[in-house]
Image (spheres, rainbow, N blue to C red):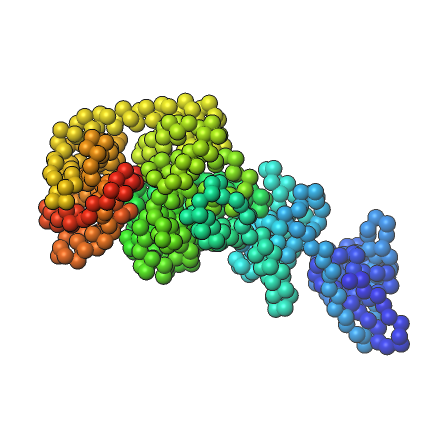
Length: 633
């Protein structure tokens, strides 16, 4: 506010300016507390605030002053060029009046037209990065996140008292660096007390509003899926809020077609939202990472890698610890040991999955869990179908690129849901024949096999045809799917003569194959897909209920059609019944895998077959989901 002298006969008023006060807060004829900042032959320069300074000419005072001397001055003139003239005064007893600055607080997301201007920002520090030059404070307000560069000296931390989550006021000049905006800091103050709470409350209300997901109409009319929309919206809200708070997001997804149909749309939507809300061009790289998991659960190897990277990024880049988003994975008791590891750190966990869940085991560790089984549905609602809708809730303009993706996801996991007809028709309306969709799924599985632990972002985008070149997509998919099928044929030519057959008491066919000794190793297809392809051929060949087991020294991959199995339950029973078997595993009801110690293989497989023989046949299950859960066991 502007300080004006009063002439009421009382003691003179001396104004003590807030450091952020500008020339707009002073007036000629007023008295101010000042500090000498320089001594020259013709006078002294004084500061009355961080940005308001002027000259007291030697003709206006007797004696001498030194740097850092405090004194009272009168502002005698504000010249047209902005220079200020002061005169030291002796005022005797006086009244001190504090003068705060009326901030014209700028919006971090609206600085594009203020390059070169001095601005004031109020927000929360969400990242602090020390470079070889300045310290970069990323400050978030109601409208976005802006990097603010403060320089102490090369490589030295500026404002060491400032910490992540502090509410601060920043004054500085808006500059453009490498085609991105940043604020060159003049001053940075941590707010406290009521002032901080006011700003924090304002930010919270605004971020809550900006985090709200977009309302979208489902791509197809399917009540089984749309009943899950409220929980998907809550996940979208949490992910948008995470971006606004500049907390990184780490996605782990199953390394198969459905897993990629789930993760790629969410990645594209979140990256678009990051671009909208962050000025830093590196924000996408720092705030989002997608990594596949080869196993159909979150392995200790995965969590160790993720936690190590997160802690290194926190130390190196001043980031918050990430939110973990599990897609097409994360619903089972096998995930719990990894979750227990994360529980020692501030890492929220969100799960969107369609594997048969163990909610009592998982939900104590997760912040959100969306799974069709929790709605009395099943795996026919694939994770890719759910995540396309989730991506649209995060960033609706992405819809046009994703209309074919749910059909690919369903074909990859061989969903027999009635809605598949609608999804395929929707894809066909976008120019994708069903045969092409199947080729895309085959190409995705093939690339997932060779990518192993690499996300393969650009390659997978081309295969799935999101944000890429249409002609290249078609040619690439044709090549990859043809190559994949050729390699499957080669594998089955070698394996089929070694398939063992027996007829169970239930009259179901049981086929077994030792994929360790009677199939090519370390090539495509892996044991899971090899077992699945053998199973598909036997289902087509017999037209009867079929169970297929592909096994190795310490694992077995299970496929079933027409037999009412509950693989997770069977695994649990085997673990209890076979002492020293070390049995674990799971998956879908009729598609899954188990592990055991090598020395107990025969006992485990024999007990498994007995349980399968006791299972009821179910004509409605014939030709149901055969699954596509490829392990590299």
